[in-house]
Image (cartoon, rainbow, N blue to C red; front, side, top):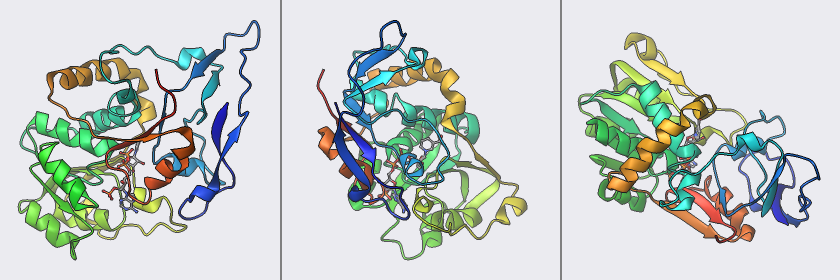
Length: 304
Ligand code: NDP
């Protein structure tokens, strides 16, 4: 049984040297009389939260093994896949944690209304691409930022964003936001933090909402370079609210039915970045932080 383990705690940007492919991670037998289940893993999901798990003082959160077979000792945590007619890999992304994050964060925290002006950072990623499409379905005006022209093109042509820009090519983020939102932003779906958040705040409208989903630009910094302009929260009565997808696991079935329906009707598109083989997990995972992935990053480690 091969698996990828953390070789050493990480400070700064993770590298492939911090991870190691080893064999014999778990024994390949279920203890007699136990309720445990041995699972053969077909896909590994690569997610930004894994960076937090690599730090010495990490806050324990969800993560089972990154390995070919996993012994699940709490089988009640497993759930049935209700739409096997859809690609199974979707359950690592659009029908998995990233999808539920987008759905719960947008509808429950952002509280969108038809006609709202919505801005999404890291918009072509696993979470951002679904937030944007749900915002379009809701009747919002939607703009996304991403880190390459290829990603920007996908936002406009595949996901139906009204506009998008490559933040790396913009000398002045404030000017880019003013160009895209001359009348200001009602909802900012925050995935990156740092300079982008600082630029967004003065461009928010009165009573705007900032849904703080993640701040990937901060994860590898020893000292966060927090956003200036925070007083805009007060002057403009902006609601800035964080959330954890963990709190929404109980709503999974409603989410699965709604998103599976959209997928089957062709109302939602999916872009996945699929690597092949457990020996490529480290590269795929590190690639999230060097911005290599286009869409949901996953790795196929066995075939059905
Ligand atoms: P993505 O696929 O969006 O993540 C990778 C992308 O992040 C990269 O391709 C890159 O896109 C962008 N990125 C990487 N480093 C930086 C940087 N230094 N500055 C700016 N952008 C950067 O991942 P997900 O869609 O899975 O996650 C999106 C966000 O949602 C993350 O912040 C994550 O932590 C958060 N999250 C929060 C959850 C919650 O419960 N609150 C649950 C799940 C995810 P680009 O080239 O466009 O810059």
